[in-house]
Length: 287
Image (cartoon, rainbow, N blue to C red):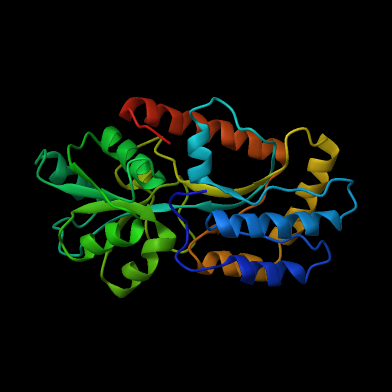
């Protein structure tokens, strides 16, 4: 599964060790790339077999990028089991940008159409869609500069070549804490645990209804009986409550959550509608 990753460091093996200490044996694994996804899939299947459900397969976690691709089709191919983390984004600039808060930032950019630029990790990436929605709702006209990955997209903001971006808290929190980036607002309707002092974009702009980001969650194979999916979800919720799991996710700029299968289905439908509208409005081609 190619695309933007939600954390800059490897967390899958650490979470395997943590989850392995719990009696359920389920492993919380983050998809990294095709090779590691195949490895994680095999690990997950072996662990689920230990639950004696009669089903030995669980999909390695999907993330917001994978989910965004599904917005083209009108449905997700496999039933959701449980969300395990929300991935908040944050609007950041170089500290030299002349705006004390988000209202001033919007006023400055709006007053100078075409003058400023924003970066993303690619036109089909979550970061671009999150920023495109912000620009549309705030009525901003800025030049898009796509990069191959979050790292260079953020580096050129630190270097002063690009004006702003809305990138994951996970990828930016270290730079914000060190003073190399200035944070103006986070993308979800609730503040990010890793940046509790940064207001939401919805409240700071204000832009009522701006509530968007990425996520990580598990799905089961198509056709898995509802009772089996419910049992898997219940086991995952037990793991999600473990203090060490929560602490590890929070340290990576992720907001840990858990959900029932029905709650995940509702969440995915809402996100599908939101991202689908952005894809259509922006004419984005997702391969």
